[in-house]
Amino acid sequence: MKSVARMALEPGMVLGEDVECQGKVLFPAGTEVNAAVIDRLKRYSIICVTIKEDIDFATTHYEKIRFDEGFKSFRQKHAENLIRYKHLIKSFVTEGIRIPDQELLAVYEEMASTYDSGTTLLDYLYNLVPNEDELTYTHCLNSALLGGTFADWMELNEDDKKTLILSCFYYDIGKLKLPYELLWKSGKLSEEEYTLVKKHPVIGYAILNNTSSVSQRVKNAVIMHHERMDGSGYPYHMKGAKIDVFARYVAIIDTYVAMASPRSYRIALTPLQILDNFRKNLTVYDTEILLPLMKRIADAQIGTTVQLSDDSVWDVFLIHSDSYSLPVLKNQADEIMDLRENPQLKIVKNL
Image (cartoon, rainbow, N blue to C red; front, side, top):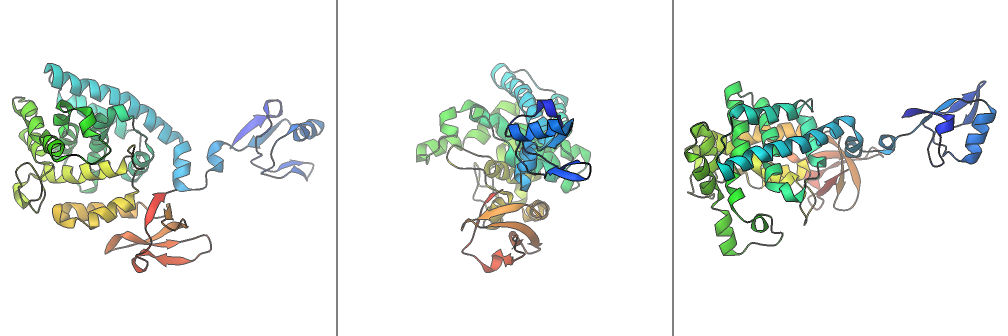
């Protein structure tokens, strides 16, 4: 809410607080301003009143975030640093201009200064609408931010945290050599198209291979980030511990960011929807990394508002320790519902 001088009032504004004069309420909070209201305020010599702002009309967690000044700052810095990051990567891929690690880490640090916790970052990423012309760059920038948060949550040392962040900045670099229309095709890829897309880890590794300034661990993450613990990944169908640990982290981060980002053919999945997808595919990821991260993500959803597949609206009330993606919910009537006991219902979006 904000204070507005009577002379600056406009019809359609809404009073945020009661307007009183000599112990009498002239207008209660919630009154819509019109010419008669302004005239009466003038007669009673009321100099200024409190008016509701857009954020005051927001009723749910995610509605409020969209009006939050912190999110607006994050969105602005994200746009600026996306341009900066794109220039660095594009110059490297097309002209061979090497990127000092500190240049990329500085992009991360500037972005990290715009949010106070990993929980806040998850909220901001969910509400961020990417430019479809910059999806590859946006995807890696967002992955680097999430990589830094995951490193903190998993208590990695500073060197390993930097390696993970750099791995996220570089891992999809091979896609920049592929046709954009192929990468972001909304329909199903043909077998030939999918075979071409699956070459991007090898292409990325080839771009980095002769670059001594990029560590071998980062290069490993680039070529292995689509390998899976059960051998179902590509390009070499590696299994388990043979996959570099940074690639195992990136596999999780890449999947999360892809699902958390809106596309032309679907809205962004909610964090709990993402966790449900992970739950269904535990065998392909390193669960020693994934499960602790799932718990942190799930705990961050307590208090948020979700809409279910039957259009009902609930708050996330409790997270089960053995079933992160199927929480206990509570509605405005104080009714409790456990999603584990209602498998016919699904979370469809955050409000």
